[in-house]
Length: 182
Image: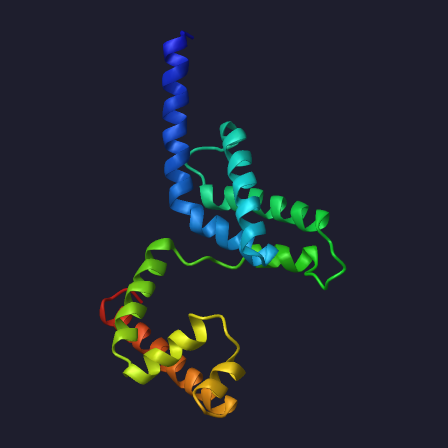
């Protein structure tokens, strides 16, 4: 094989790999994050997984499920990471982690549609509800501190958040159903 042919094959494989990775990166990252429970660690494991996927891409059979293959690699990388980082904390067993792998992941397109619907539904909330959401989810502060700041009982804030979440869930499901997505 000539050098030009090898370069073309490499470029073609890289393009194919990148298209697969782009399509499944959220699925792979979400799996890793669910296993390691730390954003910084998940990013590190994700990078290691991507390197391993590229290094072993020649073993991937085109036409089969890249997401499933990549998820197995991510699962093993995550398990290896967890084994090396055991800190005496309560951790999931390997058996439970394997069961989590089998939980279907929502397709990226549906996830994006849900986020868009959520943004629209959030704008339909009252100004007070929007402010409460920003205070509780945007600041990282504890609910008790926010309740004290807005001079409401903590349970009242929890109840309001539950009501808002139910309303948002109902609105998102209704929008997606109306659009024929669900």
